[in-house]
Amino acid sequence: QSALTQPASVSGSPGQSITISCTGTSSDVGGYNYVSWYQQHPGKAPKLMIYDVSNRPSGVSNRFSGSKSGNTASLTISGLQAEDEADYYCSSYTSSSTLKVFGGGTKLTVL
Amino acid sequence: QITLKESGPTLVKPTQTLTLTCTFSGFSLSTSGVGVGWIRQPPGKALEWLALIYWDDDKRYSPSLKSRLTITKDTSKNQVVLTMTNMDPVDTATYYCAHSASSATMVRGVDYFDYWGQGTLVTVSS
Image (cartoon, rainbow over all chains, first blue to last red; front, side, top):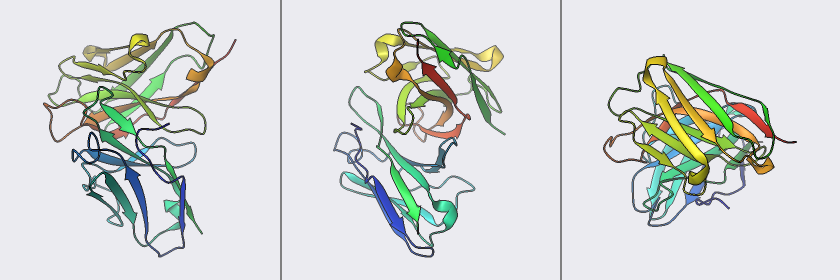
């Protein structure tokens, strides 16, 4: 069981917007602004999409955005494209001895 | 251009020790703020953070695996080595190494992984 809770799957049609949630506690997501998001296509290594809750690395499309409210962080993808179909993982710093935790992952299907 | 590549055995027997090497280029592990981490992913399952080593040789481990893990670095060779003892079939996974960065370099664990290796699948079976 992962420390951060994500929905197992989300779906959307091309052009639509979707949001993936990542729920933790006040010891991780809610207590610090150190949430990151990763995209993983089948058979490939994860790719950093968002860091420190809402910052986009150079080269990542501005269709991807991150936010946080309370103990829940969110990744929003606007203008959904077929190439966005992938698994998405959130990660956070935690003040517990675990130090760093990942979510269980969310499979995004573009209909 | 930062690149990382994992190497090591693809098959290990139960109870054996796994040694994985991450060879990287495009950065130095002696530069302040830099770290290299290991993350694994069992087939069809989620990512799991294992260990991190920083430029100042500070080492951090996942508590659930700490007794079995050792992470070291060889700055001159641009390599980071992860050893995991007493391997079990449940340790079958793709193991990734990744470059870590953070906006708060003096706080450990707040890193994000911005560059990843391609991963190496390790199967534990007799």
